[in-house]
Image (cartoon, rainbow, N blue to C red; front, side):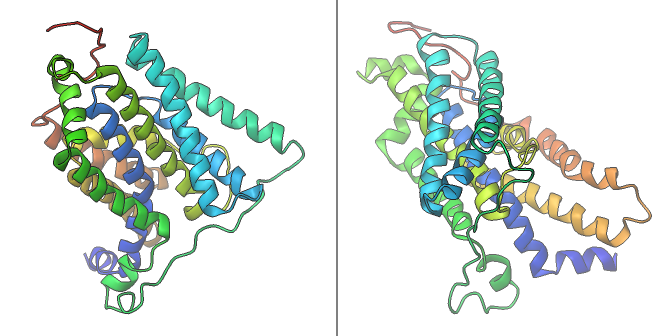
Length: 315
């Protein structure tokens, strides 16, 4: 019990939880926007990889850190546009298209890496984003080192939660996006383009997903290596359901998973000699599944999710 109290009372533990949660925040916001518009984007795992590789490679080639962020977002938007073309314009299966996008984006990223750097034995390192101490706030007990000594990308993720929530619930554009995911016929009756709104939502959501990958190579680590995404995209898909498609709950879900992951790392360091390491690796996923089961039963999902739309169609 003392071990658990020491872990949860540590500011470093909560700082690590926020860092681990940051790419999930980007990813779950992107998936949420797509699904709010009625499109499931299972390409998220591959878009994470594409964003990680594109952002890191851009910085390595001299684009600068924020240039790398922009390139990563553009790479994600490009794959999102392809997914939107296949699902919104052609009306193909969103599941099959999403898995195809994941395979394509992952393969294209690895191919680009190998062809751009054919002779390297280990990934070149870049100078990543550094933690920024907020004057006055970073010196506060406990909350200072936990929250106010994060990188700018973490702050960007937190700000985006507020922006996405404001746009979805306080603007006409957000109302249209939510309506197109619930009742596209009513949107068309108002003279708005169902296809245009869905395509825009998927492109923007995919750009945010790619920023989650960019965080891994430009903030959490300082290089791109195979397998670094490690299923984070799939976790984001589950977190959207956990959050009931609401940005505030999405932030809570990402932080919860980040805390689970940070907890297993700290607990493994404390009692790893007694319990097999695989048990600790499973813990955040098992706890996330438990939380998902408890919450998802009452989730209010977008009514037109996964339903293709044809102009003039009525339900």
